[in-house]
Length: 233
Image 1 (cartoon, rainbow, N blue to C red):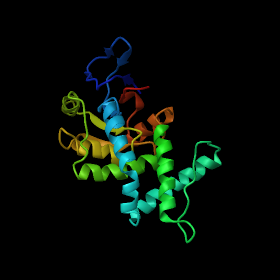
Image 2 (image 1 turned 90 degrees about the vertical axis):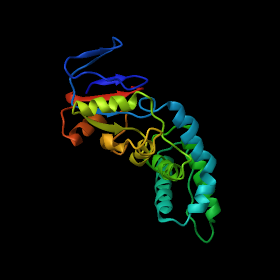
Image 3 (image 1 turned 180 degrees about the vertical axis):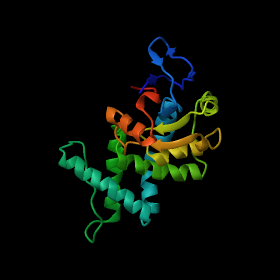
Image 4 (image 1 turned 180 degrees about the horizontal axis):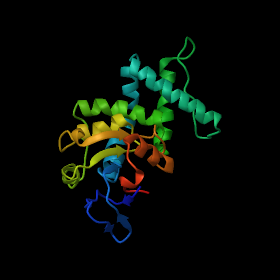
């Protein structure tokens, strides 16, 4: 699978192999699989807007939504991950208690805040954390406090790929729901119609080669016909 590392999307013709910055040869391809952070979207948007939104509103969000079924499922996923981390001997992992007659909701909520804060400081790419972040961001996008940012050349690149008949997919460590929020509520409008599908770490970690093979297999195309775009290899 051809891989291009850049600070913004690269538009390449499918007619002949193309050399980008003298470092990578882009062969003809039918499918584009793009990362988000640093590729379609500025890193600072994630680091300075999305992440602070979670940490600044986390305690209030937990309290306000504590009885919701979606919250209960999200908390259970975080608890299961915490238990796994502890069992695996991860020294920084902290347990999340279960609410009971002897354990207050406030105690459990504080455990969750502690767990999420250390995981975010470590920049973990863990499904339960990413899902919870997406749960919070959904509210932020819906009420207008958040708007997805994309580079100015992203939409023209999407348009060119579509005009050439290429299919476009997203593969990011952020949850599929979070991906859809960035593009569905972007400052340039709803961009979801450009994508044929989305992948996150449920298919595998981005540092594992087999993740990309799985994506190609799921799409139904030979890996050699897929162009993967990222700012970080």
